[in-house]
Image: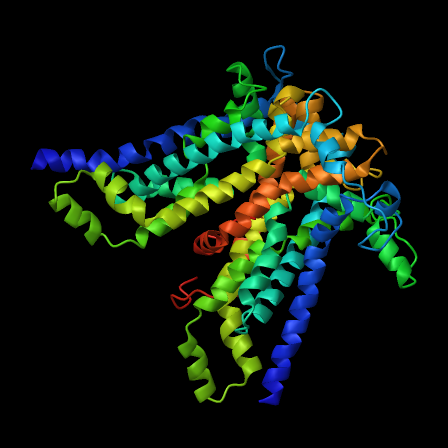
Length: 279
Length: 298
């Protein structure tokens, strides 16, 4: 009895300490975005004696011609269509795989699972050459168009798993009521898989929002920069001027993801545990 | 009736058609094309010129950058992935002890995985581990001399590895889900048979988690081989190319020098390496992964 409860107590202490270590960098980032350069460097204290309050407004305005307002709008222009199209296309394809038998189904399904393992690095260059030929460089089309074709097997698989959990009797009774297969999807199944749709949307939002590699490859003009690119720009540009502005914009750039994470936590954990890849 | 049946046979195909097109255009075609480009000299201005295996010859015999990138990446993968998974498993096991605040802890540990790949976190890492950054200041408080976390070629790679380990949350959530799915009657049966807690841990929990270990191992390994953002933003591959990960080499050849043929060959070498490592993991998995269908695993 005492053994078990002391064990539990030890677990709590351990987990709290670890949690503190895990989260401390983020707290430091937030607090330091209000500090002066002297307090950011060479000090182990979390709180400083003097604070500056203009780091956010100055950082937001940026140093060059375009500020973070532009970068935020750009990122939304890229992320939102990508998220919506990913959800729509993945649902349709997952429905096809989970509810119908058709020629070559097994082969196609295995192919889809194989693409989960296909390293992006292998397809990156021909894609770039293709998009270049299409005149899509320096636009958001390389992000948006592929998402309309359900190119992420991760999401399809996640939704297939979810569809499999919904009883087929639902479809059958709807068929008897005269629904065709598309109406069954829209009217019967979609309302039931809202949690899974949320999961897909949230994951895709955060991954696309944080994406750096594709952004740096495809977007070249500052006017079209995403938040990731803008942040790197300010890191390079502000050579030792005011680091708090860089930190402030780092905070701002992760705020949408943190908000989404806390608001939709349930879906996150659900999503990652039903399929659970990546991260 | 028969007619309806026949049209029914193809209806599923219509639903998966978008994916089939996407596969052909954005995955299969690029996959094959990159092999073709790897046999050419192509700078995106002139037409690709077929040069056979010259790119591969160059990679393996006359490219110190490749050797360095391969070395650095191998160390990174071999260290970061197992440490991250061990950590994830350990925390998941502690967390699974039916603690009240489990959801809070899970959230806190998972948060870094959400943000980890972003430029903001790379910026943060750079500040934390600068020579006069917070980490060194804290160490100074307890009398440890400062470490040049990002400037010392012997250490910088480990500092990046730490960033990867910090993001153990997503693997942990998977382990946790796995632990929670283990039927409790197995433990009940175990305790009736008089098995100790430790024994049950090694005879029930661990074997039933091995499929998840396998899955995490493969996915994390594939991702780690392609790690880019941290090394690019925090250290730019330096100092002295000590964090020159494979993805940086690939990026440089393709998008700085526009040697598309050469970069394609590099990407195929990476693909081959990942496939071989995955193959080895799967081959050995027969010996250490427990399958519930009762070991129909050759």
